[in-house]
Structure formats: C-alpha cells, structure tokens
Image (cartoon, rainbow, N blue to C red; front, side):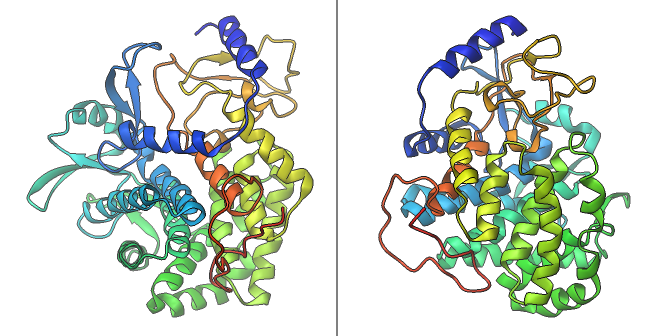
Length: 430
C-alpha cells in the first residue's frame, strides 16, 4: 500500500466514532480460533492479496510460543470477568499448544513452534524458519516438526501466560495442566543451569545476565508447585539485589529493540504480584519504577494495564488514556499495510527511523503486537496480506475489564482477591 493511500485510509478510520467493546473482543477471539490457531499455537495467516480471504501460507511461526502465552493470559482474564464457556475452552486449547511445545523436544526444552509434518502449510513454515533449526520427533504416533533456537522472549511469554492462568482460572484440569508444563520447563532450565541448549549442543540463549527473568519463572514455579519454593528462595537471596542489572542498562535506549520493555514488564509483573515479603518486593518495585518512568509516556495500553495490576490502584489519567488507546486500536488496519512517515510534515524526526515523540496509535506501524514495537518508529509494515491476531487489543481490554477501567458487563459478585500469591484485588469503583 502506498503511503498516501495508507494515510487516507487511516484518516477515514480516525473520523469514525469507535468505542472499545466486548463485542469487538469476542469477535477477535473467534477469528483467532478460526484462523490463527491452526495447531493450537498462535501463527498469522498470509492471504493471496490485500483484499483476499484465501490463506496461502502461515507466517511468524518463530514467535508462536510468546504470543500463545499472551493469548492464554488474555483469555484467562476474559474467563474471570465473564465465566464464558468458550473462554475456558480457549484457555484449554492454548494450554494444549504450550504443552506440545514443552513435550515435542523430548527433554523439557521449549520449542518456538511445533506442528504435524503432514500439516497443509508445514513446508512454508519450515522454509521461513529454517534459520532457527528444524527438528523432527514422533509424539503419540505422529511425526511433528519443531522449531529451535529458542529465545528468552519465548520463555517469558509462556511463563507470563501460565502464571496468569493459574490464578484466574479456578479449574482443576487447567491448574493441573499448568503445573505439568511449568514443572517440565523449569526442571529443564535448572538442569541446564539456565543455558538453553539445542539438540546439537549449541546454546541458543542464556538467562545468566537476567536475574529478573530467572526469579520470575521460579516465582511462577513456586506458585504452581511447592517443590520449587526452595529454588526460588535461594535464587531470591542471591539475586534480588541485582534484579535490575539488565533493565537499568536497557532503559538507556528507549527506541531500539523495544521488545525488551515488554519482556521486562511481564516478568516483573509476575515477580511483584507473587512476592509477599516486603523487603524483596520493594527491591523488585524499585527496578519496576525505573522501567515505568521510561515507558509511562509512550502511549502503551498494555503497559498501562500491567501498571494498574502492579500498583493495585486507579489512576484517572492513565486509565482514561488506556480507554482512548483501545478505542484507537480499533481504527487501525488488521493487516500489515506499509506505512512511511519519514517525509511527512506531521511528525518531527529525531533520527533516520524515529520520531521525536510517540506517534498516535492509529498512525503507528503495523505489526504483530503493537505494544512491543517502538512508538517512535516512522516506517514499516508489509504488503497488506498478513493479518495480525489482535492479542494487542484482547489482553489490555480484558485486563481493563477485570480492574474496572472499562465497565460493560456486570459479572456475578465474588471475592476476586487471591491473597499475597494471587492477582491484586479487583476494584469495582474505577
């Protein structure tokens, strides 16, 4: 799509009155179930043309783990708010996908993505992700393909979703499944001393320099399986004072590798909400405050809602901004149309690819998960043929509903507080 045409489309969408609603969220969930979860894991369909609904291939398979984890969190919040049976079914389907990622490797290593070798679109995903390493394993009598070179991003997204789902979905089967997956993944990481090792012996990543990630995963482990309590407490004793070591460096650059802020925020979210010792929690909170001071003016609905959860209190300015951001998200194109604002007089540039101030939501570059991309980015996108899943709307929307930032559906009255090891008490007065 040409920049001028893209501008006209965005201007037309902006002019239309839009309000974030449950109907939009449910419609997005239904679309995800229909064409973004071909094997129980999040992938994005690519269509024959911008105006076509014919799926020709699936793409973005290397990030299936992280976004399946985020989707699990979104549907868990939805279930807690509405108790909808299809939300529970979606939770269980996402968990089945994550369990496949933990089992298909044969030793508890997390795969980036996995699918049957007979899947119609297997060849295209294999070709696109070959650089990460393609592996095969027979599981329950079927041959599966799995993608390696697993990153810290994938683990962070999975543990984020598992931790949220355990506390929000009070279902015995769901909790048992989460315990199984979490135990398998943590046993592997502890056995490998936090070195993620591929079948050939090569190390794809290490958590050595990220104490906040190790502690967050172990905190989730302790929550779902008491057998990890001593592992968490020992790690906490030695690492809590350095929990901000990586983050303090990352905040020095607020544009490049922006996804780092999503990883830091979701990991600190679980770490803070699952810590009931004031001394340690204050240490974690000090790190979070440094991170938040960097991102609080970036126009990020996802970070705003995680901040609402961490703080446990309403903030009129933040919460109103979140509502407006979700309204504006609905005005964005669902497909990856090309946008280029480098020659536009609308946005002052402070670098070759960055604006001096965050772009309005409706003008930001099209991508898979809006809130992990720099709000300063001036150009990007594709050919308008790849459809985003919309988890970047679902997750902050259902969190906003849970914490009373958006009012629409009156759930049956219940005690939403789960104590020191659960999610913060939900407010009904915001």
